[in-house]
Image 1 (cartoon, rainbow, N blue to C red):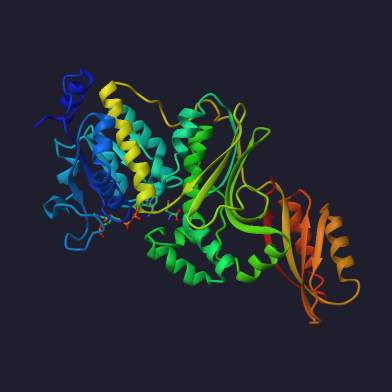
Image 2 (cartoon, helix red, strand yellow):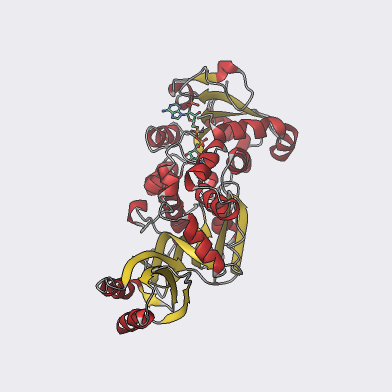
Length: 445
Ligand code: NAP
Ligand code: HSE
């Protein structure tokens, strides 16, 4: 039985060709099962790639008797975290439990016990990434978190390593699979919000508490991680302006579609002359936009680098095997690094923390207003908005002879503050303006 440090030394010295690397899993749910299934399905390929065997030594669960989605020796299941965190045989701890506690404490303890850590936990990484990077450094171990953003898409590795020679100027993407699945099913199949959410849960995309997905918090966690990776900024995820999709109705999706737009939940971080504009919000995007064709549980991130230009990464953003793929990739990376005695560098961008973080600044907006269908109404609206510097790019009104009709305006770029003031004044004309029913950002390309 070799202690972790001895094993690392031997591997570094090249004295062990085929030493078995022992992994401890914290959690065997959707993602944990995906990891175990990938190890058993791709054993030969993995052994060939790293020149050694990987053994899942122990797995922490809450309920040992629960049916599992992966086949494994029941005897390695435990309900005692110490069997993994204090186990001298285990070299890499893989945290796939979810939630902030006890996950954060276990990750920290694992690193303090000189074990490398891989996690897909965006809540922990977004909230504690600075502290965790410091703990990793102090204990000379690695922490990897590719699966925490974008499921199977290698976003963190691409930004950190492949685009290391770029200054990243902007990120905009669909980074929550559950909400994208819901919006897709509502728009394509006329499914209700609740029905689509239920399906997303059955497919294993949603968080244990799905309100994190539908309220946008999961995307805000991921955006905070991306901001640390791309811009070197630790932003408290709770400070990121965030709106989910709970107010998006099937009718809204239909109105937008009639105008040639798709409704998507977008996460945005853009450097606008030294201000980092960062927010999570539902938006409409023209059908020609590259993100408009990203459907179901797929995610995509458009990255703008000052050398590479525009780049879009696309793939499955949630699910057992896609996320398992990212986790296994991180494990293999760590083993390769152990074997080569190499460091692959911090996942944090250097030198950009002089950016000033701001919320929603300027944008073009889709506004649906319910009005009384009578002469002069459009004039009242455009004059009022015009007084606040809000210029209209297009207007569309559908009248089927009812007294109240929806009118949809798309504005030119305007400051959000001015828009809110203009709309507040408009609400005073209650004899003709019945409701400002929906405001969505327009993301163009
Ligand atoms: P899950 O299906 O709910 O699985 C959680 C696992 O952790 C279960 O095996 C559970 O044990 C165990 N667990 C939870 N709390 C525990 C505790 N206090 N003590 C011991 N065991 C505990 O979750 P998941 O979907 O696999 O997600 C895991 C992590 O990956 C989360 O951080 C999630 O945000 C992230 N992630 C998920 C996806 C996805 O598509 N699902 C994608 C990317 C990232 P029992 O089985 O005994 O209940
Ligand atoms: N609940 C998350 C999502 C899982 O739907 O995107 C992937 O992080």
